[in-house]
Length: 343
Image 1 (cartoon, rainbow, N blue to C red):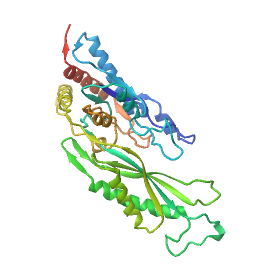
Image 2: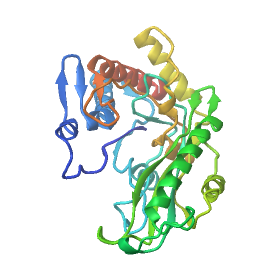
Image 3: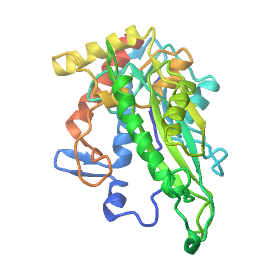
Image 4: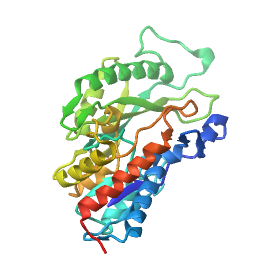
């Protein structure tokens, strides 16, 4: 299976900047191709299609089967609170749907940006909701109390909780750093959203913090919940912590024939060994986790990203020559792994 995803992320808000709107499109400038959807992940899907078309056009008959899949909802939003239903499936829904309906193979190559390194593992992800309690209190009658515990305002308490979570996250990524033969995993964590119910004219009785934690393969969300509980409890205020999404991370097993095929193809195209992938590329969640979880050995390979100034990540650009090189590697990998007979 050659697998890439078609979805690019959520719809832009009405107040999005001109630069944010522009990067939603796609264009060529000099030797670079720009675009949020191009880089993640339509360029790699197109490269798979061009590689397969080239093999077919050459007259070569493959001995093994080749399946190309362009899936949706690789970047699905988790289900929580009022956000329920098919539009909030969590990570990897499209590829899970695919495998559950019998689209399987001996190996799966996921096309994503990887700096031309071979990504052999990805993190899991656990999402937590931390509810911080206060009291509804009319502003003229506000009495702040002598301690954080006594303060009635949930948002004031929330600010301290966010700082405690940030301190925990800094220690976490240092303590959980994991080096293996395929690179270095640095699982990170951050607050991704804060909100309260009700209207802006009245103080809320509670405030919710949504916290995204990446996990090294094998790490359990229950372990993280206990650590977060301890970190926030040190503030001596009323709160609850619940997990609402868990996606497992995996290190590829029995993927050596796929890895060797990519290495051979990379050496032929570049004249050198593939580099180690950047740490970020092995510290996120991608669809190879779905394949590895279901017993289909899977790795990821693709071109590097280039810098630009319009998106939040500032990395939604790619060299056209790099995309062509990746296409050549994909085509040679197909021939090596599937085997072939020439007409």
